[in-house]
Length: 357
Image 1 (spheres, helix red, strand yellow):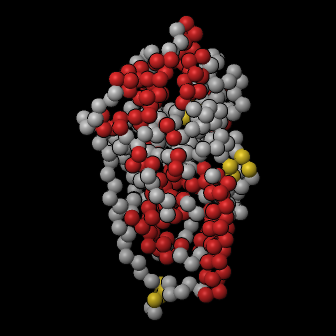
Image 2 (tube, helix red, strand yellow):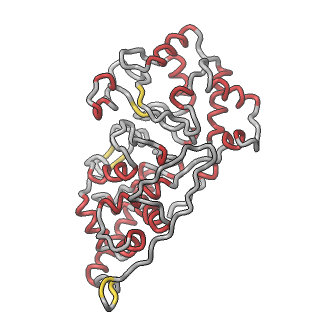
Image 3 (spheres, rainbow, N blue to C red):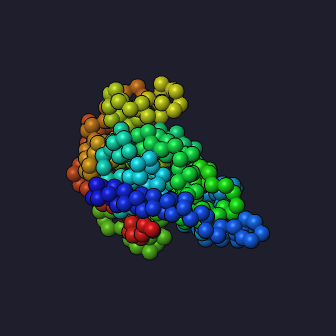
């Protein structure tokens, strides 16, 4: 499926090249009126609502959500025109069919496999840092970095802007979203960030139970209780309505981490092997798991937390305690099945029916 998707992206890229040639030979085609540059109407405010129970959200003042901006960002998210060879789009590693995660163990860029599995971008509007190591402090910055990363899109922003300027449709789409501002990397990333802020998962079975519209089965209820008590001990890193603490932890995957994680950004030895806690919403669909995609199923993840945690100096203190306690009293098969039953209540079927452009 992944190979077919890249072939489709390559076809889209070739069509873009046709548009570029047409624009180059035919000019801008009426982008200016008789008396100078065309004036565009103000963009339409996007009808954004914060779901019940979710934290308040501060939209950047310099990038308000608009219908035109979100539509443009959606198109850019799925367009391989941002990459050097026209084979990689944002959606190559953030696949809608798996909750905007990557089904491959290592995400693939123009130079081949990277060393990490891309994080899902659902509910990213509430995340103060992005990427496993937290190197981006906003969705705008998160959209900026992959374009020039040699392992990801391998392109240069000036070349991206030229491709977009010569495209038969993008100049007008940018003008409708942002007015007469010159096309720039900042506008591209603002549009993509607007689209990503609308990727909200909030209508799972769990949410309907909380709202009093449904009830857990006995097994789901038991899993919910395990998740939120010291026996299951999931809630410390994955608690709250977002099911992430948005913090960084070394969860004891390796005695000597091959990937330094947060330490590469912070420069602190204490951050060695620490990675951002991912949201568990739609976790049923986002395999493989962990920053390096080493686990293929939820069962494997629970097996790891049951008996595979490697204790160490930078491992989260709570997980060092979990490792000690689980050696004495591991989770039973019934407890593991109950936890998985609860985790599957976090699946949002409405979100999973997202339709690409």
